[in-house]
Length: 195
Image (tube, rainbow, N blue to C red; front, side, top):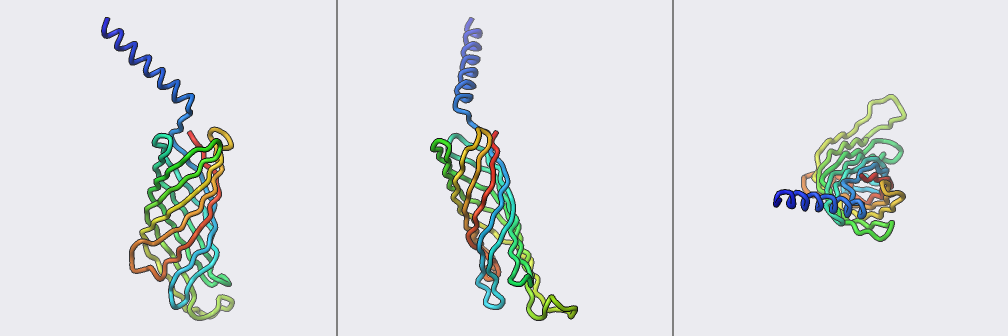
């Protein structure tokens, strides 16, 4: 008799918790794609780089309760040098932690990404790309350890779809490449799907 009561109680609690979760509509994860643009620069004394950048990427985060999310994100950023005499490319990604607060359909989010990436930097020192004479160029490839604090605003279109506007500032944390690394603010637009 005790076993039957115990099993009935466990079954009742499981059904009750499922009903509560169905009413609150807790989501397991969110994931999506983003386009971004920004302005980046470095502090290199010879042939400094600065300008508008753009790129694409995405993220996947798991919901830990009502306010916290943990997951990963990664992006590729490109910045052509003036008059297309070279290009700065960075692929990066890492672990992201976020705090969200829901106000109706609007969800403000504060987050931090820690990770790393690789920079490919090609710039011309002498010559012109408009002739067939060999040019003198510098090509550097190096790794970076990054931190990216971010704020974003998400708008719930449907239960499983959100529009997102996000701003971050990517900072190189360590290394001898501080003068070559180009960092700065970026603005992201994209969608997140929730399950």
